[in-house]
Image (tube, rainbow, N blue to C red):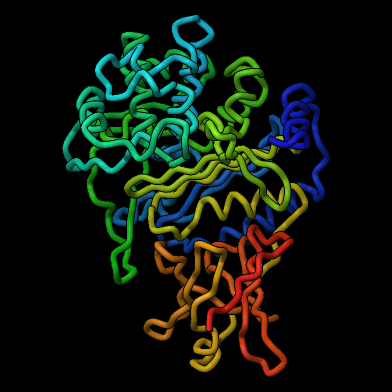
Length: 454
């Protein structure tokens, strides 16, 4: 972690005075509302949104439908499954238990799960920051209820992805194992321990685990999308399967108060939140953009502490700007990536701190304009991306990844519809032929030039 980022984190922990916003609240709300109206149809699954600075909520709203069959609109006090945002609670519970002397992040997993393969060489810290090598490649019927012990057996029966500490790979399995550690130490189910250690003391009354059969007041319906782009009910999956990696539900209000409690030292001592919000590294010193239950990144050049979540029928994003003390929460009741909670949170956050993304409008293009872009472009020595046309639509695919639609904008720009953060500048030679793409990650310079492969 660089010193500038550390200084920003320390400032946010120790000096929580108000920071002036670049625009008045009414203007911010109008512009945020315009972003939501453009991204979310009022008669489709949608999202609840909250923007706050310090302890003040600036913008709180919802757009779309909580239940399509009954035509029930979304409202910002409704309850969503939050998927992997659960990991921040699991990580904090581990650190909280560490303050009692019941465990240390340096403890080996074998101290708590005696028979786990190679558990003597896996530390809790490595599970927390995803460097343990525990694989997610095991398979189970998603509709079949699970308990923590059965999940641990499934994980233990699969070979690791790599030796502990040697690499980084996002691992839901690692957080399921942390849930098992919490159960071993407390004698309670992982979610009961999180309630007792964190949710109840902090007044997070809507953050909880509900079994599949539970009737939950205010919980919205989760939707998905079929191959024809039609809205469908999300396929059934037992919520017991994700366990401590992704099974909690919450609201935009609770998640704002959760982030605020972490950043102000109410949830954990400041040194432990700093441990959560500090980027870690492999044993060889290779940095990773993850702390303990929190991701580290930048938005418009500003450091952010964040996490996303995806689970059948739902998607979520919590993004915190420590230098400006701005929190953005977006909870969607669809897993179809439209709306895109990460993109919305980043654009709304950038707007709030006075560094908005450029607004790109799609142009109508013809076959010739699309065809001249088709080809393969070299990203770096080991990766490339390909642009192609299917059913008259321009698509881009990074090697090994999914195909995504691209739109052209004025100024020879390409962007991802319903994203609005990253974009490409088309580079042409003196004859007008496309020879490269300049990729602006997060819409920020410097660009990465991706040369076209002949």
